[in-house]
Image 1 (cartoon, rainbow over the protein chains, first blue to last red):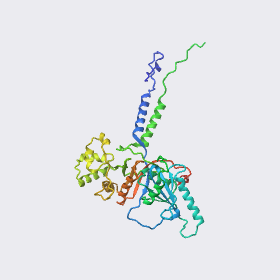
Image 2: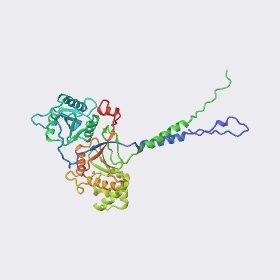
Image 3: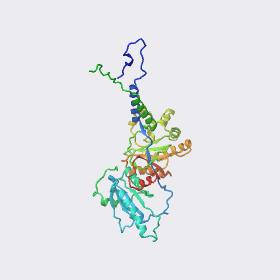
Image 4: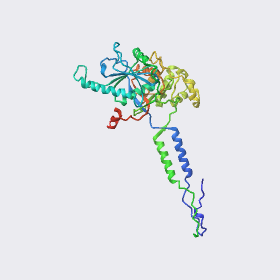
Length: 197
Length: 222
């Protein structure tokens, strides 16, 4: 460890011992690293990130902008990280939508369905341009309906997916009994999946 | 044959450079980090690609995996006024010392009646306090009947007085918190015309090839 200064002691001359100006820095290094360790353990890096969400208040219940069926997609968040989705609003009882299941995952998950929705809308607009009810400004609209069995992570993942895919119009709304029925019909056939992407 | 033996090499290593590095790192950590707030619950938040930093002057509602709500506020001056007011209007019978203590303490998550016994607990044992969560009344969102609303509204009132600006509301919930519980909290606040929330999430890379990625690449940011 600490080493005595011996550099000047080689020759015994008439002159006084030449003392080295070198200082042993080992303890200082020890101290430095000790403090670093302390700081690593007791502090956090910078500030956590947040996701801003603005909810509609109950006072402004206006039905001014109806969702167009061809731009709409509904996501039902259920337990085990399952996401049931269908295109359209699904309000026509005579013509129930085709409900499919997906998961929050980087590949082959719900993201592909959202990308497909955007493509479908672009195509539809091209084909039906000028028709009544088709506006060039129409954008994808996603209705997120978390079931009571879903977790907070599902909700955040769904909102995150909106951000990732650049969906500007989306709403977090209550699930309806009809939607619950959709889930029930396909439940059991689909395995649970870990929640984290 | 060589006459002299090789000179004995010293085992002494020059520590100056090492010392420089150590202190450089030390400085970096001191400047780039901040102390972990002492929170009563450990929460692992879900991740998102959001990059909005948490605003200052924030009411922090922490929710553990079971859905218990903890109330925290980083503005200690406002917290002092707040607790004095709560103590008066709800007759909690706290001493001035206990009120000071509350202003500097971490998040609190139990009904108001238990606040006194919580503050009587030595600070080391407070993490083990049997928290029941701030009660969220799903039936009513009025200040009188919903304690969560009461806490938040009183923090907003006094935060406004001190900062001149109503505090933000951040929600830090665990990935496993049931959506029902989160919704109950949101609904109670929405009923009181509070509609803006910051959900605390951990950072995540933007997936390549998506709309958000292209947006970021074109320099518009996230």
